[in-house]
Length: 203
Image 1 (cartoon, rainbow, N blue to C red):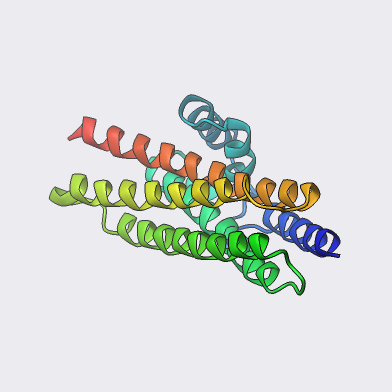
Image 2: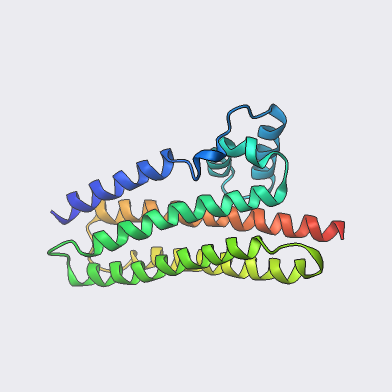
């Protein structure tokens, strides 16, 4: 019962994460080949998970154009949306009746950690809005700190599911979701670092 409920719920959320754009106003209709090429090159030259990076950001090419700040900011929004969805899922899953106590404990820890990651990504996006002028380096250090903290929380949550008496199918499904948000956040951090270093080199 535990396995089938969680498996179906997690699968449904994963479909939503993949298929729903971050913002309908950011569609890639009319994107030029140059914009698409810029995103692909940036993803493959910068991130650890370039295919995921390109797949999740190319649809926003008409908004990003060739702007490194917009690229990093969009990556943060994509990561936030996926992390927020996973956070809501984990909250629901933690309330499943009849969970093994150790599984329930891992779920509750994960709810807290993914919730922290949501907050940290929100803060990073807020800070990105203030990047510019003489305080650029300080602001970008703050952004990088917030995104790094979110990535640590994702990894900690995922590590928690290596322990305890969780059924293999459920563990595999949960970790697939957690791995996805960790990779999205890793990609966002790489693009944030790229923007910070590019801007700094122009100063």
